[in-house]
Image (cartoon, rainbow, N blue to C red):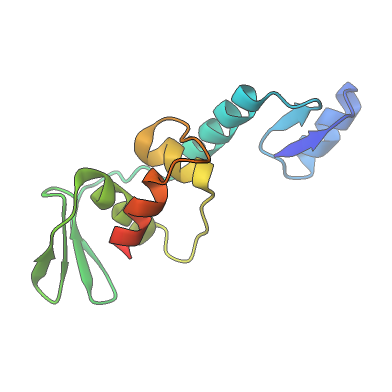
Length: 125
């Protein structure tokens, strides 16, 4: 996503042709930015066309039962912990911003001072 003070049509077209998925003109509005990042994230995360179980290293993930297991032993996870784990297992090696995680798992913005995301991530680790 490009964020710039340039507002001419040719600047926008050049940014998009250069590989940007979206373009915002400064000054940036916080809620618009979060909405656009959420929209980008929805487009980037591939929705699986099937729900078959898959493996990632020693882990086995079964989306039909919402179960993650390691070496045949089910791991006890809350719904949000499972959703975070599933997101990471489906996107190995990919980095996610706090905002992208909040939008994907909670479908909302999580205030910067909240420790909700940190707590869930700690438990998933």
